Image (cartoon, rainbow, N blue to C red; front, side, top):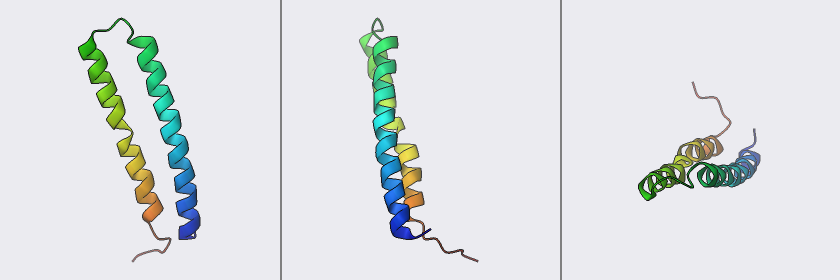
Length: 71
C-alpha cells in the first residue's frame, strides 16, 4: 500500500474510532453510572478516557509502516 494512502486511511479510521469510542463511553457512563458514587464515576471516566490510547497507538503504528517487506 502506498504510504500516503495508508496515512489517509489510518487518519479516517482513527477519527471515526475516536468519535465512536467517545460517544460509546459517554453513553455507557451516563446510562450505567447515574446512581454510582463519585469515586466509581471518576475511576470509570479515567479508565475510559485513557483506554482509547492503545488502539489509537496501534493505528498510528500501522500508518507509519512502510509497505516494503524486510528480510
